[in-house]
Amino acid sequence: MGRRKKKKFNDIREYRNVYENFHPMIPELRGEHGEITEMKGKWGEKHFGNNNPITLELACGRGEYTIQLARKYPHRNFIGVDIKGARIHQGATIALEEGLDNVAFLRMRIEKINNFIADGEIQSIWITFPDPFLAKENRRLTFPRFLDSYKKMLSENGVVHLKTDSIDLYEYTMETLQDYPQTEIQYHSPDIYSAPLDIEELEFKTYYEKAHLENNKKITYIRFNFKD
Image (cartoon, rainbow, N blue to C red; front, side, top):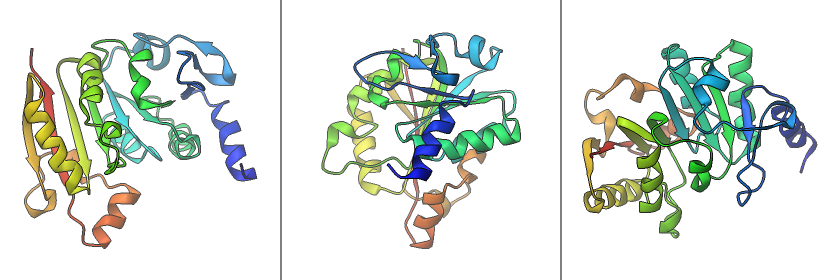
């Protein structure tokens, strides 16, 4: 590990807005100064200090969507989730510098998310430009086992947003959702910029999206929820 990368990892272990799970087989979470903490079912109370709705950004990378959502909605809470600590460092640093107290970051493997988020604790989920894992279907973030996790975490009327440049992931997700029980596709588009945007939040652009648009790639979007 290089010196700069090592510094970033050391920084986030001292940050008050970053929580880390160091071993996927041990459901233990460490917060500021590396102290063990229990957050499942207590994110509003223990971290945010309020009962405002919570949104997750999965595979958040640098946390660009998390930060932009938090700026726009100061009375909602946001948690960016990713396994890459050096990437999380950027979003976490910006949140601290700007005093965005409605932002937290969780460094962990997403398949273990239910260890740290309680059933019904989340109002909405954003999945923004994830790795489509074209050769590994079971690692795609809309594979059925991930959908099972989202269904548990989401509160009543909770929604999932998928924004991606991968037409393969878009088509795969559409097919998977049609076969997944009690799922409702609220809206979808294989090219969101070919018409007026469905919701304001789609205007936010990450580093990767800007690069994709410069290469004339289409940006796709799906919004869905789980019915009782």
